[in-house]
Length: 62
Image 1 (tube, rainbow, N blue to C red):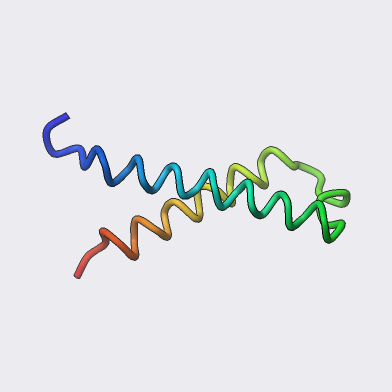
Image 2 (tube, rainbow, N blue to C red):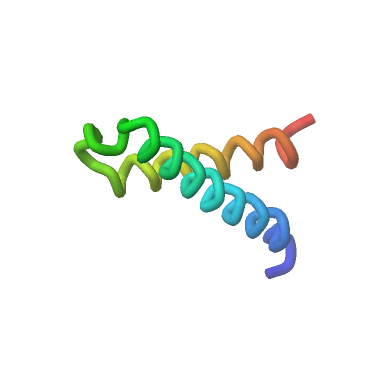
């Protein structure tokens, strides 16, 4: 666990889950959710993208 950035990846993961849940609510309210073919894949991918974006912005190079 030494050097694993334990709190950082946990914050990024929780942020990804929260963003994915919020986007699901928005998609259901706007009707986009009904036309999605692969809902699980879509929401997992959006959560991962959000988590990686937080990692890049908060802990990235520079």
